[in-house]
Image 1 (cartoon, rainbow, N blue to C red):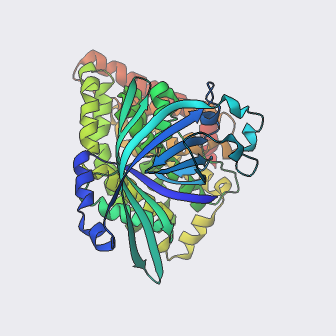
Image 2 (spheres, rainbow, N blue to C red; image 1 turned 30 degrees about the vertical axis):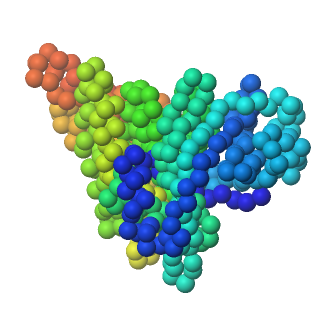
Image 3 (cartoon, rainbow, N blue to C red; image 1 turned 135 degrees about the vertical axis):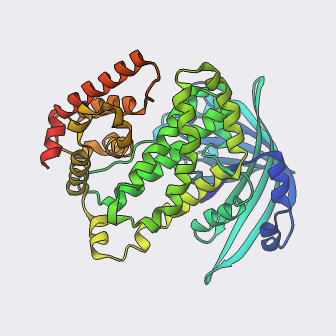
Length: 462
């Protein structure tokens, strides 16, 4: 068994050609590119039991070699994945179920009749492979770079494979992200948290690809630094999966959810106070603001404009063909892996805040934000409510992602009422007097509803 640590990056054919000649890879590649045709047959039961268990089983023909591979459930976030992998060289291209014994076979599939395993789809592609090595400080880094071009084929359906895979052979996982980020400075590289096997299953069932990751488990005792890191990784991973699925099928709701992940991440970053000095978050905030400046208005307009919704998939493809999205994703992954917000904190108060438990820090944050929101003012001046959107979004991000750690009555109800307030604050003031009066009255009534909520009153007293 070996652990496979890799990052997959979706690219265009033009970018694939540019990577082959990229100066950075040329400098660190001593042996040149080796081209091989890889023919892969994946297996599962008719009920897709392996897919449900996050297990992939394949036979690969690589020249004269036949390799049986089992990949078990692992961790994958923001395009960087770590999985257990078992390989066996076979004398012929026939699945050997005797190899799938207790040492490698997942316990949750122990009762599965392996004789029901059947071929389900293929992934056939040409791989150009090179060993990339360099010195990183006092350590050596060795990465296998693979340029893959081909197709996933499931019955009469197929999808193109066009991607860069970087697999760690020696060194620290951070080196993968560093190399990918350097390559993404001028090339459009889309971190892609979907395996070739998942693409095959998706051709059978578009909903088989989960667009949201399991929520991180937070407790009242979780330190702020750990909670923020877990939530930020979660939002970044979700944004990449949503981007991949929206690129695939163009469903409008996916784009809305993609924008919401960015809004929540921006809100969390701006809520940390001295735990994250502004200079440590400048680049991240600027990147998020640039993305939201383009996509938030489009999503708002598209709610009531079918033409905007129809045009959005093509606009999103243009976004993915620009280096911006890949740069944001990879640089944010590096920032989170290095916990860069803690590096230049310097002050005792900042370190103390970063170590504070959620059960003490979060009520104070929400109380401060609730007081500063001054809802009584917007009961009188509802036309100005939009100026408080950043504060409302900070409150909502924490309520959405971490309200389970607070013991405050009616908190779920408050979250629902705040959602309504946020929607109303997002609606533009209309030039039509009647519509305008309806919106302003709705804002006024919703501000009253939040103000009278029991949980809100508790926060104001915290």
